[in-house]
Length: 212
Picture 1: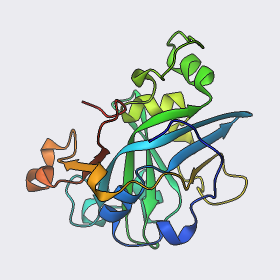
Picture 2: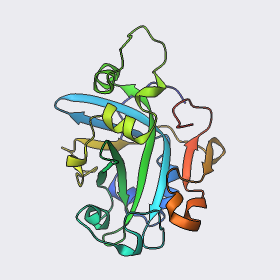
Picture 3: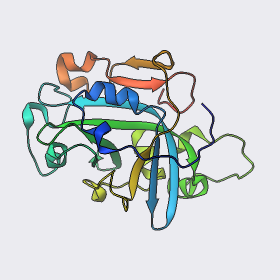
Picture 4: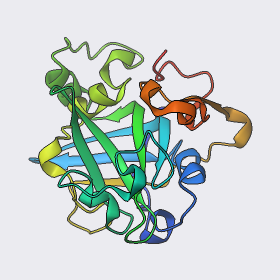
């Protein structure tokens, strides 16, 4: 995949409203996550995702259709951001999918930086070298890192990914073929019994922008 990005058509509601969250997690690979916050635009190609599905997935925050102040956004119709605070430190960005009252979401775990690299470095407190040929994988590898780099915060949970004035959205871009996708168990869900073994983490082969 090249690291050149030309603004493209936004992903529409039809994509998010489907019920197969595992398929959506794979199809998000190669698409471009874009934020425009306080006039600063950043963009990165999605390289790693994880699927979560209520009510049967014990690793899902809405397991058993549990509705709380935090998970309520997962029960809204697909095409919204679900951003929660993890360990009191990391803000993790998820894409809500499926029709209303079906709590499915895809965690975006890593992106390849394409636009706004200087802003990303400032937010991540990593020195910026404009002469560097390829982006630093530390910038946006890992869900907490990418949210920080792209200005995403739990206070923005529930925002639309579809409306024209959204501060965050996803654009169509490179089509990633099934042969370029690797799958394995999700990370950090050991508490979820047999669900911990489900191969619902997906990443693009041969990219440094994947959590090792």
